Image (cartoon, rainbow, N blue to C red):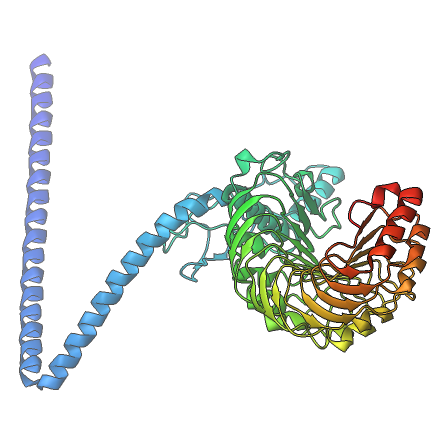
Length: 526
């Protein structure tokens, strides 16, 4: 029995061994067959390719020279476009590294359009949608209501850094209020980086705070859920801002106030400033701006009330389109390098102040200035203005400060007697001539500077009726006759200068004695 069992076991082992060998042999035969089939198919494919090549060769042989040249040009243009595309893609990748700093805000939408290649991206590689766990049907009604409310909320994505197609980094802007806040935050962050924000004197809240209204100098409409999220005001005067104004700053189209005066801002005024169509107050005075005033600045900002660019190095002429800024109330362009003539001002019927002093402006005074009915202050001193004082100035019924000093203006100044609200009159260092008019109607006149001109005739007695007079300078003229003895009545007078004229000696001596008694501080220059 034992020997029989052993023989059976050996027999089964032999059978299993033969079965394995047959299986392996069968598998080898199948693989060999597959290789043979593959080789046959490869040979067929090669023969077909040869036939195609022969066909193409025959077609090419039949082509004319013009057709060959046309095909060559198509090939070259295709190749060049591929090379240009690769170069452009490489440049965009370099630029994208800088822009990547701004791409910190998640995009709440699944699809977005690339600004570089204009292609629509779905979820970019590496981004995942935050999924919410499904709740069981056995939960109570409270949990069901909670899940319904959660489904209505915005589902966010992890930050997307590059376009799937061109690889350019972008800042992805959602729609609506959140999009406005994201755009504003990115523009302000670019401003912070471009103007050396780490060196600012005051930078509390910048970059760190998620609420824009907490950033120093920024006023934004983000107080509650109903707010628009728009940035309304940037007020950073004398804050050690350095560098050129970044173009991203002018994407804040809701800005109404941009106040950056007394800083170290340099370069030209960007043309993108015309995008700020809601701007009402612009002050970049006391900086280091150069270049001309952009034409679009005057043409595209109809709501601007204050334009202050004083104390820079701005050159060129004042654009004629200034006359289209009908809402303008204050124009401060003094202390620059502006040249050319003063453009027409008659359409500025709401303007209150114009200061163009200390420039290189030439030509005549504007003859249509009578259209500036609300004008209170007009200063064009230290320029190269010529010609006579237009009669239109007599219609400036609200003017209180008129400064025409240090030019080469000439002729009489009789029209100033119509300016009943005038307080400060300075026409010194010109070539005005003729007799001084009767100033009796100018009751509010406090300072009168008529020195260094060609005035002749006597000093009118009407001067003694100006009880608010504090300064009277008529030196270096050709004035004659007697000095009014009634000057002693001017109790507010602190300075009077009558030197280098042709007044009568005895009347000068009498005036001096009278003033020594009543106004001893005013007798130095008589």
